[in-house]
Amino acid sequence: MEPMNKDIVIRGQQIYLRPITVEDTEMVVRWRNMPVVVKNFIYRKPVSCEDHENWLKNKVFKGLVHQFIVCRNEDQLPMGSVYLQNFEEEHRKAESGIYLGEAQAYGKGIGTEAIHLMAGYAFETLGMHKLAARVLAYNTASRRLHEKTGYVQEAYLKDELFLDGQYEDLVMFGAINPRG
Ligand SMILES: CC(C)(COP(=O)(O)OP(=O)(O)OC[C@H]1O[C@@H](n2cnc3c(N)ncnc32)[C@H](O)[C@@H]1OP(=O)(O)O)[C@@H](O)C(=O)NCCC(=O)NCCS
Image (tube, rainbow, N blue to C red; front, side):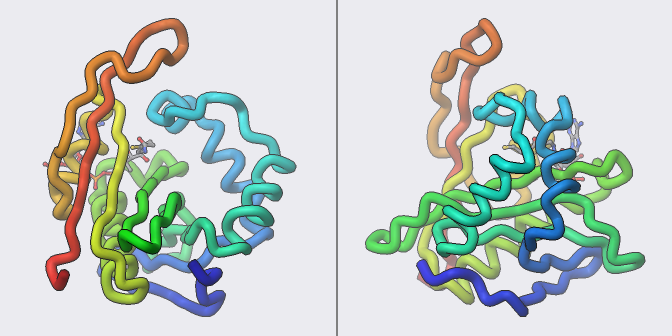
């Protein structure tokens, strides 16, 4: 996949998505290490600024990941991040991910709108046919968010992961491009 267009802005009703930049590093690392985010992610180790800069250099700036910052329309404040990764161009597939990092962002429909906007980008701009998402079974908000944005549950994997000393179930979601 080509690296994302640095000037793209995807506008929604209460938020817009803009490409992540190096200047976002401190903020994104703070979000990514918040307990509420870590406990809902499969990768649990603390992320340093150096780790994140390597992620930007090796993944985002090479086009292997397309990552956005989710900002509020009313005051441009950054609230979290959404991204596409694990592109399989032959199959026109990618995996989506999301985390909100500001406490004031939760439960206001921001996550739902962010995934909706990013799915539109994946389907219409990138021409993807299918998006996948992996959600830990206990993450009710994320399961609901995906159901509300056109994803359907494709599998429920019992005891799929061993995280922090216990087995956890994983739900696999898939969304198909309505235009093919
Ligand atoms: C998952 C996440 C992105 C949801 O974003 P959000 O903006 O808070 O969610 P929304 O306000 O769009 O709500 C989506 C749905 O989840 C429900 N929901 C939101 N927070 C919830 C909670 N804490 N418990 C149960 N349901 C919840 C909402 O009610 C809504 O469903 P409804 O329309 O049927 O009422 C956000 O909670 C988050 O970033 N969590 C930490 C990281 C994470 O879990 N990432 C996803 C990994 S797969």
